[in-house]
Image (tube, rainbow, N blue to C red; front, side):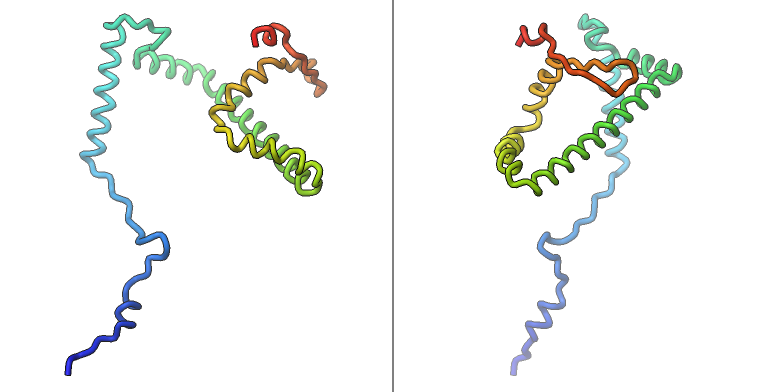
Amino acid sequence: MAATTNRVSQTTSRPSHGRFGPIRRRRRTRWPEIAASILLFVVLMVALEELLPALGIRSYILPTPSAVGKALLNDLLAGALWRHVATTLLEILLGWTLGSAAGFLLGVGLIQSPFLEAALTPYIVAMQAVPKVALAPVIVVAIAMMRIICLGSSVRCRIEVDADVLADV
């Protein structure tokens, strides 16, 4: 009599990979690949350093890598760069906070008010359908048309439309 095998035990002994397949380990980066990347970077920097002046490209259009490095080092040592980094981080934090608060309040308003939901849903859907890259120039022009004038350190601000910008549009 031929030996029979238990098919159930064969199928359950294999590892289950779930619905996304087996977990693959990340390939380790090897030293030759790292060395090739560094060598390519050095070759590109040397080529830019030599080709930019040879081709007659003015430094205010595309500066050489050494000029960029010197300017970066000067700004780091002078402390001006850190002041600008702090200002940028503060603006990012304020923008994120205001945007999150506005989005939260709008979301609560849409949930609580059927009228507001019916009125704003077509505009929300239309904005989601348009790529954000296409909206960026429109937002820049809209902001350029308005000039926010804050009086001293007071919180009161007024927005006025710049007639010169409107004439160009």
